[in-house]
Every structure is written in structure tokens, then in C-alpha cells.
Amino acid sequence: MRFFTTTLVLLSALVVSVLGQACDTDAPVSEGRDDNGSNFTYPYPVQFYNFTSQEQSLQMAYMDVEPSSLVDFMGTITLLHGKFYCASTWNETIAFLVGQGYRVIAVDQVGFCKSSKPVGYQFSFMQLASNTNSLLNSIGITSTILMGHSMGGMLSLRYSLMFPSEVSELMVLDPLGLENWFIKGVPYQTIDAGFVTESARTWDSIKTYEETYYYTSNWSCSYDIWVTQLFNIYQGSQGTQFAYNMAQTTDMIFTQPVVYELYNLSMPSLLMVGQNDTTSIGNTWASAAVDLTLGHYPVLAEEAHEVIEDNTLVIFPNVGHSAQVSEPDLFQSTILAWLNR
Ligand SMILES: *[C@@H]1O[C@H](CO)[C@@H](O)[C@H](O)[C@H]1NC(C)=O
Ligand SMILES: *[C@@H]1O[C@H](CO)[C@@H](O)[C@H](O)[C@H]1NC(C)=O
Ligand SMILES: *[C@@H]1O[C@H](CO)[C@@H](O)[C@H](O)[C@H]1NC(C)=O
Ligand SMILES: *[C@@H]1O[C@H](CO)[C@@H](O)[C@H](O)[C@H]1NC(C)=O
Ligand SMILES: *[C@@H]1O[C@H](CO)[C@@H](O)[C@H](O)[C@H]1NC(C)=O
Ligand SMILES: *[C@@H]1O[C@H](CO)[C@@H](O)[C@H](O)[C@H]1NC(C)=O
Ligand SMILES: *[C@H]1O[C@H](CO)[C@@H](O)[C@H](O)[C@H]1NC(C)=O
Image (cartoon, rainbow, N blue to C red; front, side, top):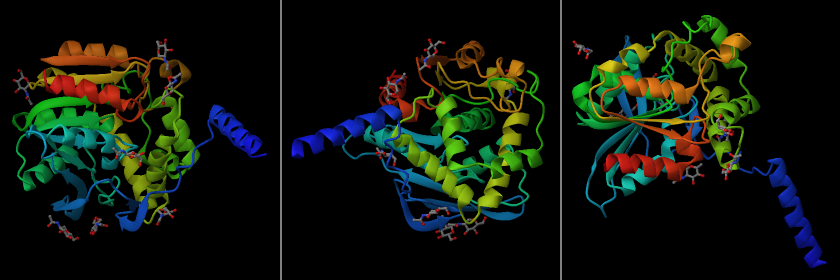
């Protein structure tokens, strides 16, 4: 009897995992805090940078994680998150880098995660880069290795153009902005229309989007928590303003391409993209014919690589938009090999 029960349990576990429904991780890791509308518990202590921008008193949340004392100090690395993620989503990367002797700063941009959700803020990459630069300067950092993912990758490129003497090396993972979507035929979408889309997001719609674009349609239960982190902000105490800020930042990404300026990057850089990433802004509202021309990351990355001085290009085979989450070992060994080159 016991044998049969065990066998049945094992069998049903197998069936469930084949169907991809075995996830039991949707309980939010929350300590009941509400930092600017996010109750997610970050893996390291959260600090706040208080500053005034566009006549508003704002806060940027960040983690400042000390390097392991067991190895030599290697430098400071600043991490910039993508649009559907937060500073916390770098948790595996942070743990790895501090173990290698790096001090790691991971910030939440204004409008995102545990940072302020301002009303009437004019979002621009130059504004976000300036905010990030003054945060870093406020904690004594005037030179950093910079790493950005997705929207944060686009921001790291912008930051490096604006503050070249403060970026010693640049690592960029699947940055947005390697193509100009408007010129490829994607119509402009107003912030008001974007707000309608942002207000309609559900846990399932966020998951489906990430599954398709970030994870090559190959979901792992461990990704659930990042959907919950994001969805809880939409559902939280500042959800409406967050949705509006997200519509504003989509407008920012669409209207402020960085691709034409890449030739001006001067520091050594590492560009990493997933072979199967097809993320683009506007593909969901472009025609099907235009959509087919968007987000060919291996091609876009080759083009960027040709233009950027002193650049190393790595294309991760069979990987989507988020190698740091889906393939942490491959991602970590790649950045370490480049840092130690
Ligand atoms: C920022 O303001 C908060 C109070 O809102 C305070 O707890 C925190 O210490 C301040 N941060 C700094 C760096 O002064
Ligand atoms: C990162 O966070 C995820 C989700 O909470 C967790 O499964 C994983 O163990 C964390 N990793 C580290 C190194 O903290
Ligand atoms: C799906 O992801 C798992 C790891 O999460 C990996 O072992 C497997 O090879 C992947 N399958 C495909 C088809 O990419
Ligand atoms: C976190 O916030 C979400 C959205 O408001 C809510 O559904 C959830 O219950 C909260 N979790 C805790 C433990 O407060
Ligand atoms: C871009 O490069 C040109 C030519 O090298 C240079 O004159 C210009 O100052 C650079 N601009 C920036 C913002 O670095
Ligand atoms: C990634 O793209 C390559 C080339 O188009 C394809 O052969 C491969 O099956 C794709 N892998 C996944 C996991 O989708
Ligand atoms: C969030 O942002 C507002 C201002 O935009 C600030 O006054 C507030 O104290 C912030 N911090 C937290 C932890 O909620």
C-alpha cells in the first residue's frame, strides 16, 4: 500500500512536471513592507537615496553589497535592471560577484520597484542616467564597472556616453535600443494608449510575455517569483501610478534610440545577447509583417559590435532575453572570463 501510494505520488509529480504546472512558488516573499508600492523582500538590505528632481522630493532604492572578505577586492560593479525586473532580480549575479571580490550596487530606477512613483515626471534616459550618477556620487563612487540588462542595458549605454570618465568597463546584456522601431515601421503609441495596456496586466499575461520573449517558451517554476514581484506592484498601494510610469518609460524607450551614438563609446565593453531573444518595443502593436523584421538580436548585436570600439561580443545559443536568470552559470562564467581577460 505504501509502495503504491509513493508510486502514485511520484507518477503524479511526473505528470505535473511534464505539463509544466508543478510551480509552488507564487507565495510572495514579503515582509509586509511597502516601499513605494513594493512589498517584495530584497536579498540584501535596501537603502534610499533622497534627492530632488524636477521639483519633486524623490527616493531611489538601492542595495550596496560588500565584497567577500575572503578574496582580494576587485572593484565596484553597478547593476541596472530591465523594465519588467527590479534590482532584486540580479540576486544570483550579486551573490556571484561579491564572492569574486566585487562591491555591488544594484539600483531601482525612479518609477520602478521600491523607488518613487512620481506624478508628472518627464522620463528620459538622460534623466535616469543623471539620477543614477548622483546616487553613485553620493556614496563616493566616481568610477564603476557598469552592467545593464534590457532597458537597463540601453540606460547603461546612455550613461556611458554621458559619463565616460566614470565608467571603467561596460557590460551589456540584451540591451533595448539596438534598433529604431519607428523607422522600421512601428507606429507611435501614445502614453495614454500605453496606460490602458499597463492597467490591464495580469499575472498570467506577464508570465506569457516573459515566457515567450525572455525564456524561449521554456518556463521554470523559479521564474514565478519575478512575475509575482512585478504583479504585486501593479496591484499594490501605488499600482495606478506605477502603471502610468510604465507607460511613460515605454514611451521613453521608443522615442530615445541610442543606436546612432554607439560609435562614441570609448571604454572596453562586453555585449552579450541571447540567440533566441526577439524582444522589441512595439511588436505587439506593429503589423505582422513589421513584427517579423524586429528584434533579431544576433544580427543587431553584430551590427553594434562592428561600430563599438574595443567591444567583445558573446551570443548565447538557445537563450532568450534573460541569460542572468535562465542560464546563470553560463552568464556568470562569461562575465568573469571577460573581467579577468
Ligand atoms: C532618506 O530618507 C529616509 C526617510 O524617508 C531616511 O530613513 C534615510 O536615512 C534617508 N537616506 C539618507 C541616505 O539620508
Ligand atoms: C534568487 O532569488 C530566487 C527567487 O527568490 C531564489 O530562488 C534563488 O535561490 C535566489 N538566489 C540567490 C543566490 O540568492
Ligand atoms: C529548458 O530549460 C531547462 C533548464 O531550465 C533546460 O535544461 C532545457 O534544456 C531547456 N529546454 C529547451 C528546449 O530549451
Ligand atoms: C504584497 O502586495 C500584494 C499586492 O498588493 C498583495 O496581494 C500581497 O498580499 C502582499 N503581501 C504581503 C505579505 O503583504
Ligand atoms: C563623439 O565623438 C566625436 C568624434 O570622436 C567627438 O568629437 C564628440 O565629442 C563625441 N561626443 C561625445 C558626447 O562623447
Ligand atoms: C534558437 O534559434 C535557433 C536558430 O534559429 C534554433 O535552431 C533553435 O532551435 C532555437 N532554440 C530555442 C530554444 O528556441
Ligand atoms: C517613496 O517615495 C516618496 C516620494 O516620491 C517618498 O516620500 C517616500 O518616503 C518613499 N519611500 C518609501 C520607503 O516608501
